[in-house]
Length: 88
Image (tube, rainbow, N blue to C red; front, side, top):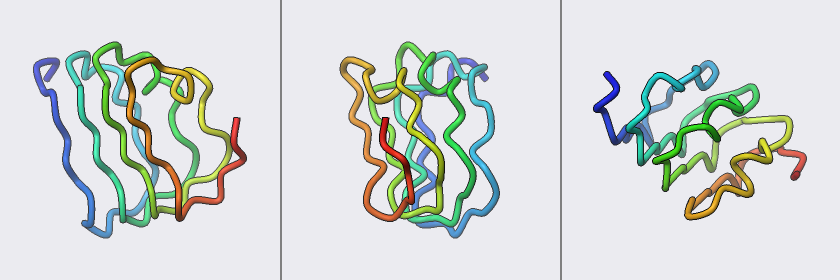
């Protein structure tokens, strides 16, 4: 599934953690906002070279936003409000 470029799963009451999506090399857009996801953001998301939009607000994500995501050029990253993060 390396050709998949968008995952739009916002507002679906999803639970659990964000899985390792590093095999989705063509992923450009990942929307997981307004769910009930917990745990930490998998650092492998920052290695997705084509990722340009990541929406994670209003979940229950904890820990730090991985620096390779927080500093990724060209990425629109929304992780607040609604997550008890420790900011990088």
